[in-house]
Image (cartoon, rainbow, N blue to C red; front, top):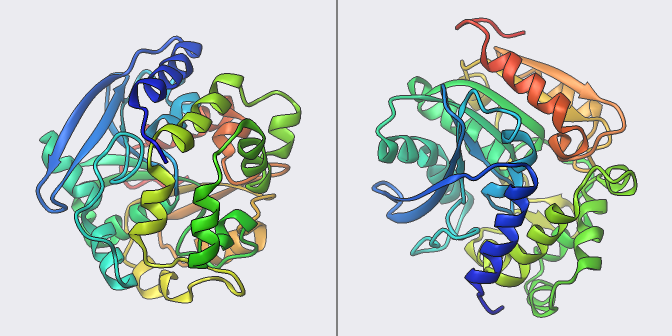
Length: 316
């Protein structure tokens, strides 16, 4: 897929402009990971690192962080995503992926000269956040996790993600030029049908995501990086699941904002998974899918601000 950074940046600029925000930008050389990462920053105040999901980028958080000017929101483009460089080597097994996830946020904090920060994450970003909190407890303050995280038991995996688990099908998927119809289909598959139908997802957001898929190698890099997380039959590579012993080591206060209509796992999976964390609370949102901050950005911002501003040691 051809890379057109200028066209991507223009779509990204229009997205941020629609919220009246002009983010700062810098590139960080990460020592542990050996990669150069692009980050954007919005707002001033306590530092919060935002970690996006699979085949996405930092600007996916725009509707939320535009409502959080009282925090220093640091938005990563994970390696290989958006405008960040890809890692020099792919992950050939789940263990190597886990080791990378353990250190990514700490690697970013080191590059920023920060001892610690709060973390907001979703999906694959949730996997990274939880592993970081278990491996580097002194680097993480409080965490807000939106929706199902990789590492939790899975309910149903959208077709487009099952296809990435089959090499022939993933190559076919990547060979098809993305278009506006495909973007809407992806959003519907992750539980955002109502948000689309009711106009809660702006045209600028749709155009930006199309540009991400069309004008950057984000999806190609994510598929190539491995290991195979999704399975066409069982839905999930069970070796990626986070064991109860690891979750028990997450001492940071965590607030889950989880949509009951999240296709990856609804209320039952949410309650079971969150119960393994010693300092976690769960907020279930009816009629909401995998990206609650896109369903209701105002509520997501209120929940994030309220939780991150609690005194140390408080969970709810």
